[in-house]
Image (cartoon, rainbow, N blue to C red; front, side, top):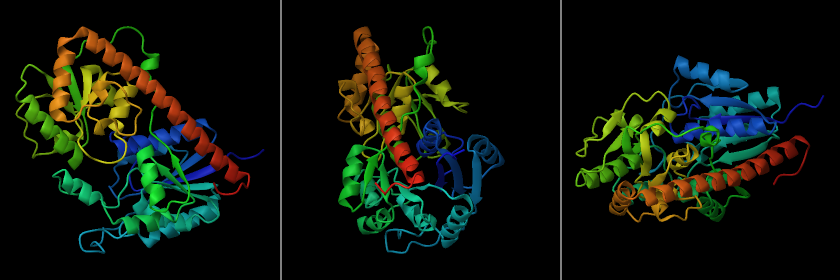
Amino acid sequence: MTRPPRLLVVSPIASHPPDQGNAARLVAFGQEMAARGILCEFLYHTLEGLQDAQREAMAAFWPVLHLHHAPPLPEPRFPGAWGLDDWCPEGLVERVAVLQRRRRYDAVVVNYVWMSRALEGAGEALRILDTHDVFGDRHHAARAEGLDPSWFFTTPEEEARGLARAELVLAIQAEEAAVLRARGARAVLTLGHAPPPPFLAEAGAPPAPRASFGYLGSANPWNTGSVRALDAALAEAPELDWLLAGSILRRRDLRLRSRPLLLDPLPEAAAFYRAVGCVVNPMTGGTGLKIKTVEALMHGRPVLGTRDAFAGLPAEHPGHRAADVPALVALMREHAASAAFRAELARASRLLALRYAAEVAVQHDALAALVAGRARGAAPP
């Protein structure tokens, strides 16, 4: 009997709990590949630590779980920027090479360009890099929005070195695919993120919301800056009630004048979506795909947001293209005042969810076909 194509996913981010965008993408990736007959093993490089509950959840989800201890991060290699391989130790490359000799993967998917060094251990497997984001000059993009850059950032030249290590580069949205091609990626496939739409299985009317509007987000600087801008605008619009949830509530420096209702702790993301009438995303700037927007759409909720909040999505409704936060608040007022606008936005949001989910399904089909092709000995893409 022919064995199924085998793939190793290497990540510095734990897949569980999937309570932030990058973890949710890992889980969706595993589900989509499994649905297409690809056996996915997971190697977690413990950059963000590991708790017993995480280990148990990941071991239950992935067919095989591997762990690699992450040493402390070194000092940045360059003044004002990280070197490409600063966060990826040689020991991880060796671990991937050992696993490849033992397990004989058909493909190795490494998450983030700053982990691309691990592809050097992939042997004859198809070397795939899932970028999640563009990291060359990411610190300049943050400062342009008045944010202090955090996490990883590097130069475009260093990023290009990482892209060159892969036979196939995955871009999370089409605009970034063009950037990655310009920076020298050999082959680029756009692979979005669209978890199965739960609203398709819902029956009956949704429960009465606890708040008219809501925001769910992690504590990264982009989200924090966007929520502060929304809070400042809503402090002048006390008639608009809203709810705030997610790990952003762990920030001790978050002082909000508009006094939102807080949903903390959040047992599951679905609890947030049941609690709000309309999801808002006030994102200004940023890179990548705004996974919080996608997940709100897939839960069947009407969504209002800025153009940046819908970057990478085929959005057409005015409620999905607010120019800035003041324009978003104006849309929130219209949503609160007009039943016709509410119905129109709800329909547009669900149609966008279905259209985007279909696009992403085709993209996963294409990737699975490439992995299966390598298992049969096909040439690189």
